Image: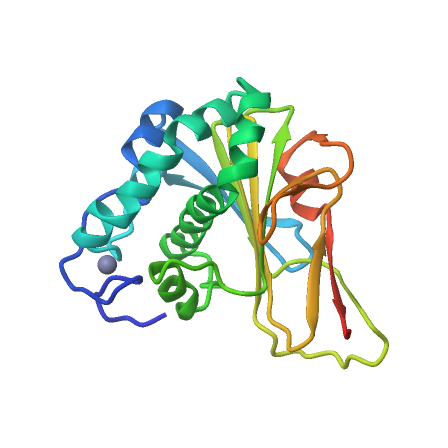
Length: 244
Ligand SMILES: [Zn+2]
């Protein structure tokens, strides 16, 4: 990521001082002044260190006023009530029907939060710069899969950031150690959201049984599952890489 003080999305320099999460979400979680346990994890997904950071200090500083008050604010408005229902597991039938129709909007909301989380935490920057630009142009990059699930435990907020887990390849596809990849799971109350990306010139598919797929296509894979913890969901699922 560039060190220049400019908006990660559009390049403007009128940076906002807002928190990376929307005010309504901070209020709903009642965490503005609380500390949040930030977990760093290694490539296998096992936590390697836990550090407490003041949650209120997750002020990005890399989003401009125009983005914050424009398309981001619009996206928050479109998703707010639905995310509140989902994270409290309220009116699930209605919300699943909403997701069926508006999965791409909710996927963009999840993607926005996850990539800002990566840019604002001191974990290494896993998300390529061009992914911020693509979201700004209204698209989720190709190769990204976004899933939703529910969790029995409901900590206020947690996340995991890694390079991702296993990839099952066709035998004739060579291993590419330079492929860009990231895997970020995010929990707010009972709601789990996972954004996973693996760069490939072949076809990829992320298999995640029991999750609700928000992107690229809406779908429920198998019987929707309620996961025990964020880690259960984080390590659940794997990529397939295959030729036609
Ligand atoms: Zn901007």
